[in-house]
Image (cartoon, rainbow, N blue to C red):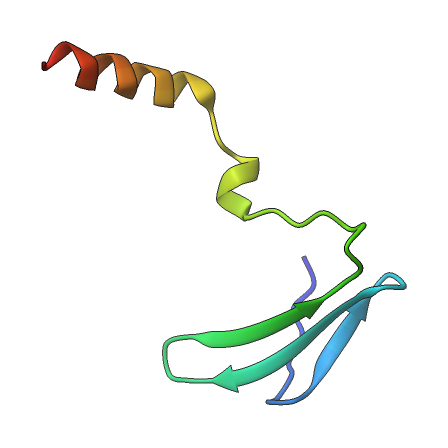
Length: 66
C-alpha cells in the first residue's frame, strides 16, 4: 500500500487514464473526484468482497418469518 499526502485541488494519476483529485478535506472525511474513461470499470470495495452465501442465507431467514 502506498500512502501519499495531497492538499485540496491536488491529485494523482494512476496508469494512463485514471485521475484522482482531492476536492475537500474535513475533520472526519475527504471528498475525492475520480476521472477515467467509460471503458474503465469501477467498483465499490464492498462489491468486490461480496459473498453470495451470506445474502442467500439472510433471504431464506427473512422469508421464513412470513
